[in-house]
Length: 199
Length: 199
Image (cartoon, rainbow over all chains, first blue to last red; front, top):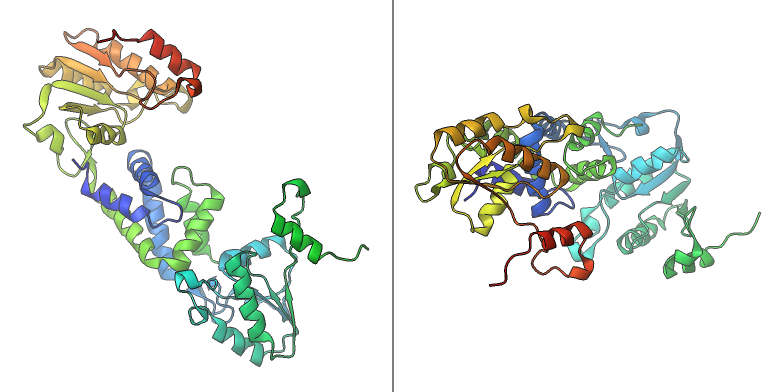
């Protein structure tokens, strides 16, 4: 006997959240209805507002609420540098570090033959136009160091080969604080291959 | 530099979900905006519908969308049996087993001095009225076997003591499929204390 069709529908809808299965969705639905109706209203309102307000920057393709995002319209950024990332979340992670002062380009995904995501599903065409029409001296490819991210990086590198610019990729290696004993083999192999001259 | 105030607000709102911290909320917000706007709309709509439609049964206090829930208005249930549970989720778990055919009463929470939840915050008054005004022969206290659940059960038991009815509590013991070697000490102690005559 179903407690309430509206709660069943809510459970079902919550499964759209990443990493949330049926059990977790049920727990969330009951928690919100039992103990936090105010929070539930806040989520519904925030979702509706974001769906209406959030669009993508016409230049770099990241999320923003205006035509061109704050970073692209800032006069404090180095416009000769372009960093290619998979998603707005990656862009934000890099911004939080504060070590990069150039512009970005967001592909909005990664190449994934298994999920049917080919080059035409990502913003490569626009990336080519930007590189062709702007005085860019270096493109830093900052995709994830995963199989799909590396494939995306390889494709991006090929795409940029005809242009007169430097293409770089993020350093792979042992993370800061990492212990060699516990490092996986591929990371250790990459750290050896990309070893740098001691200064 | 914040990507979008609307996404920041969404991240913040998603933290109302149980077990969701800032990192997870960010992942959910980006996932929905990047890859599942349809799912996001479904969640917003389901929340709004549930907030508007879901109320509590006037008799047993569980969630329902009518004045009296399906179980309370069914003529197939044993009206002399009353099972007291903490939440509608507990009621649903018991219903899914199908081993109980009586009515329910939902306290909507558990006693928790640490969280400031005293007896006045739960539906004990209504429970007293139901027991006083109906021909109930047995009340099964089915609160969780946690510190707070057991406190709630003790309080319920005291509340029901003046009435002429049998009060029972769920059996505590080794779960079916459980191995003694891996059982915690308190469960094993309870299983010994509540041991039953071999049949």
